Amino acid sequence: MEKSFKKKYMHPTRRKLVDMVHTGEYATDTSVGWSASKTEHDVGDTWEDETHKFEKKEGYTIKTSKNTDALQKIRDYLEARTKCKNPACKRDKMSHVDAKLIQHTGYCSDCLSVIETEVRIAGIWQDYSNYKVWGKMLVEGRIKLEELKQARDDVKQVYEYTNEDGTLEKWSLPQSVDDAKKELTDLINNGENELNELEEQRNTAFETVRNAGFEHTL
Image (cartoon, rainbow, N blue to C red; front, top):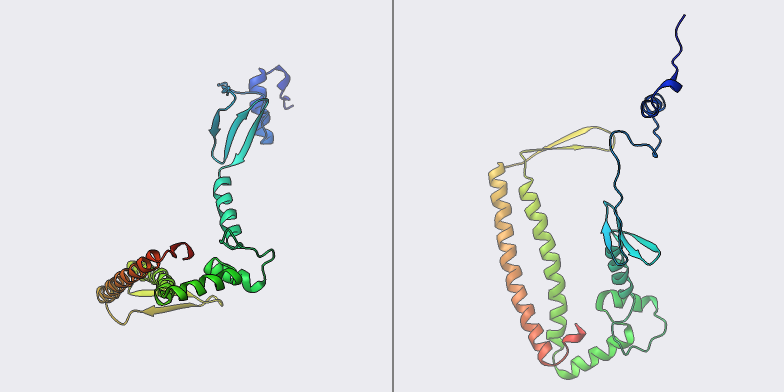
């Protein structure tokens, strides 16, 4: 006859270990072989764990996510993209057209109309508009250059693609890897030279706008 296992005669610590093995659970109020130390914090102390930040207040503790600051900056940025940046703007309600203009220029239709009229009267309209256009071109150009640099770093002789139907498609470079990298490098160098020239032109336009006192409108 099989002898039954009498856990009640075991030491409490060993009994907890047996329960853990059989059930996969372990009582959190019992420690085995070590004791946890509790850190005491004073009012005003701040500390962190892997995902949260804590601040000790009088009688309570504030717990916030580590991403709170970054998320707040994103919220502030998105909110700013919906408001006219003219501090003297008198528009109470923005239309759909205003919302688009604010995203692209920072100003509602009323404020932008006033600014552009003043810029034309000052005789710097060409530099004013060139600065804006060239600024966008620089951003787009730099993005393209980064894409070209990534493509150059990832050049392989043979590429494999899996289609939606699960079939495998292979595509080979029409030239060697070295030739492909050299071709991409030439494109990158030419692009960087063109962007440098464009940046100089944009900076010159900015100086004209700034000297006329309109840099705050850009």
